Image (cartoon, rainbow, N blue to C red):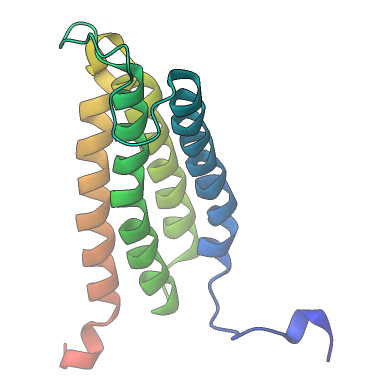
Length: 152
């Protein structure tokens, strides 16, 4: 048996191809948290020992931990609904474009939003609303692809 015939053969090449991008960015977010924890000697919690922060000057560890946590909250569900749409026969161009847009939204949420001035850059609201739109749209698409099951 060749290596190309191993695996479950569920047919998720689009989602699987996007995973390294999302995993790489998640790893960068993880690295930022770890780096700030080590440099501030704060190994539990989300505020560094310097601790003097405000809305205008948020704590860098809090920002890094929140960016990391937010990614971990939304991206697994987004990838799951995408995989279900793909398994249900979703169009490869729609799925590829949607995953590309999701990646841009998630990076923009952090790099142009949470890490912006006062953690309120424009990418934050665009990334958040875009991600919610993605979840609603992709889950609706997955349901529509399976409408025949319900007799429609």
